[in-house]
Length: 101
Image (cartoon, rainbow, N blue to C red; front, side, top):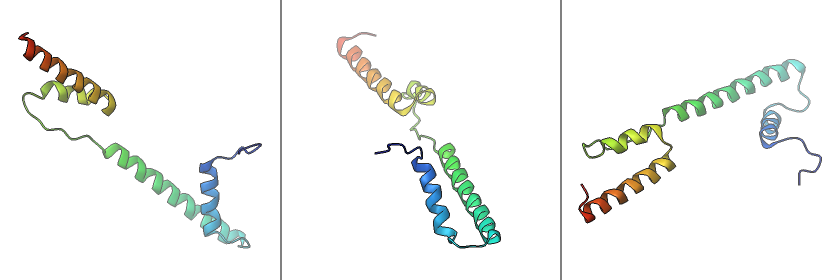
């Protein structure tokens, strides 16, 4: 358990990275150099993850029949988009089977 433990996994991860790079009995100068090196690496990792998130764009197949669903995809989350398209397919199938125009 975490009884009386106020740390979290992120903090423990940073601590482990510090311990893996900085030796226990290093000089102050060596500590500062390696500390700023670790900070630079952590910031690069953070920026890399942010860039990957902003570059991820869902792909679509463009056709005249899919014009409505493509517009929905722009504004909905993937989960909501799947739900809406499933409903649209059912509605189109029901309207085609019953002769509703």
